[in-house]
Image 1 (tube, helix red, strand yellow):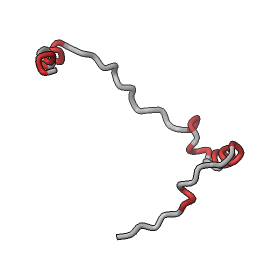
Image 2 (cartoon, rainbow, N blue to C red):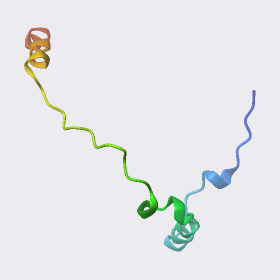
Image 3 (tube, helix red, strand yellow):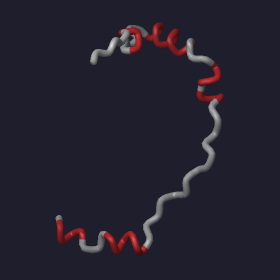
Length: 62
């Protein structure tokens, strides 16, 4: 199986002007200020007694 790729997607801009031109071509619907907010912010990660018990003897294996 062979894949055909175009180099246009793999080229890096050669100058800051080329980078700015590339970014200017991004549709406004995809720009950061127009993206939807996340549905829900995850609660902060916490460690409870059950988690601590799972690693209580970890030093014995190190």
